[in-house]
Length: 194
Image (cartoon, rainbow, N blue to C red; front, side, top):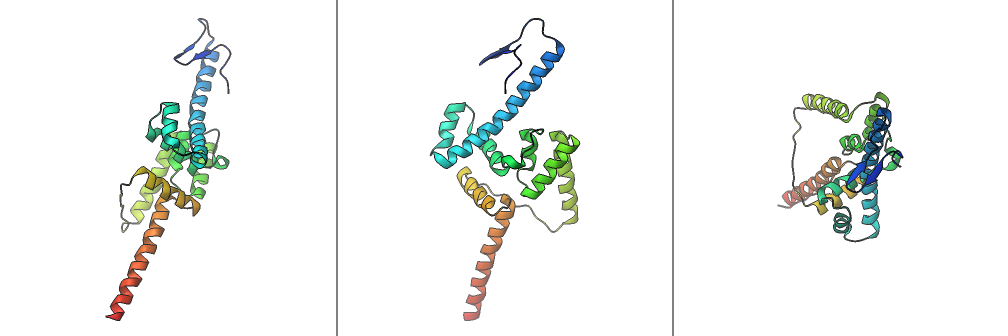
C-alpha cells in the first residue's frame, strides 16, 4: 500500500503540493484511512505471531510501537477472534471489533450483512443492540454477572474458549456449569453417606 505520488509522508506530517486537485486530495485521504485501519490488523497479527514465538511480546511491542498495552491487547484480541479468512476487506477493524465476542457463525452472519448492505460501524452496532435488547425482553429470567480478572488470566481463558470454538462468555458458562455439577454431585454423595 502506497500513497498517491503527490503526497510525501514524513514521520511527523504529510507534505502536499500547493495546487492539489480535489479528487487527488480525496483519494489521498481514503488511502491514509485504509493504511491506518490496515496497520491495526497488522499489529494484531504481529502480536499473535510474537505470542507464539517470543516471550515478553507486549513489553517489547509497547517499546517498539509506543502504543499502550490496552490498545495492543485489543488489536491482538480482535485479530485472534476473527481469523483472516473471516475478515472483510471492505469493513474496518472497528466493524470487526463489534462482532468479535460473538460465536464464529454469528460473526460471519453480521460481517456479511454489514459488507453487503454497506453498514457503518455505528449501524452495525445499532443492529446488534436491537437484537440483544429484543432477546433480553424475551428472557426476563436471565442475569448478568461481571467479574474482574487480570489480563493474563483473561487471555488464557480466551484461548481456551477459542480452542473449544466458543465465545468467552459461552466458555465461562460451560466451565461454571461443569464445576457446579461436580460440586452438586459431591454434595449429593456426601448427603447420601450421612
